Image 1 (cartoon, rainbow, N blue to C red):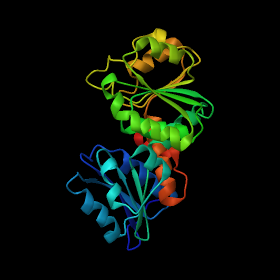
Image 2: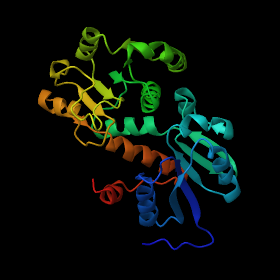
Image 3: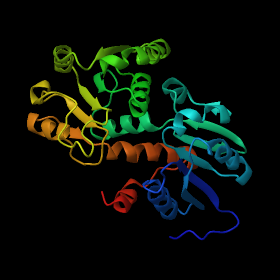
Length: 287
């Protein structure tokens, strides 16, 4: 089924700078076509100087919604009418839904990570997690894991940035009651000890991305054990050094493409009330 653009077609978009690299147009337009939903999704180059006007245009043009990348995710709050709980907790919005001119901001990054773990038979409820990094993606998945009933979350960041993240960690503790700890990534003995009791390890840093594809956020394979599920939110390269180490240690694992897919699925449901046709999107992405 193909969509014929007409006077009833609704517009959605991706607001980022740069924007042309995004997989979102292929994902959403594939889904709209498959399900016969009269919408189109385009990528727009929007930066900090044009973000306010772009959000205003959503009301003016009657856009159904939009997705955002950093730093727009953290700058958009003053221009929205409502903020969801998870977006408020992590301080970032990646999805905006327009309901009759009322704009609500959500964050589906954490939901996408939790859905990816669920799809790999590793739900977070009652589990001990180790998260490396507390940047944009890290804060989103930490907040969602706490909301979804994780037993304990140990967040390792660089020693020099611990002070910067203290307020966020305390906010998560207070709002969810989850036992969240902020620890130094340089304390390798502590990292090894905490990992020995962990069920899930998530790399939310950029360590392992090009051009430093030989780098790993953990010192060695001995830090892993077969009962540990390893997720690396990086998806390019598809197999990072961390995931190669996980394979060698007998750890089930996944890269970040599943998280990207499922965060899109969560946003798609917010936009349309429908389930994203996952297999069709995977084909469009050549997964």
